[in-house]
Image (tube, protein in one colour):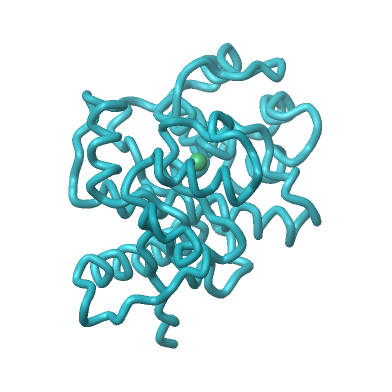
Length: 238
Ligand SMILES: [Zn+2]
């Protein structure tokens, strides 16, 4: 079945009302929009492929059907803070994307490249990096759908370090992380309900190691339960 085309809008500071209405651009007039649309469709397929690679049948049809693009993290923060009636400081200065309802809000490719190079100077920027950002945000939405379908609540997504690491792993971000962490190293870092120190790459490294040792389906299930991740240590290793 041919996927529906996501509608694409551009967030311009002076056009807040238009942004929130998420107006559609005529495709012929927006080559950047075409590229974005292709990235969103490819990222959706990446997320489906990721779930299937873990033996999970995706419990959704399409994840998003609208996309709003911001020219900078600050513009995104300004618009989203207004929309949610919260102080702009509550949205991190490194904001790069989110999905609300069936709309993807994301900063532009150029803005993300600038942010990436400042945040991760050691990690290479490639043609795939922006698509991976979109896949990361879509993975959160997919994880929400999965948690709701299986446990009836998005609280079942587990702690923030876990769902962020899951999104990093599913999106294929920071792939060059060396040998997998051993179960002993995992226990030292996250045992006893400890929150791992570090950043998204580290969360991804942990979740990749958990999936390799215990299977992602079991890990996702256990993340939904109290006592995570300590129940895992007694599970049969894969
Ligand atoms: Zn995230």
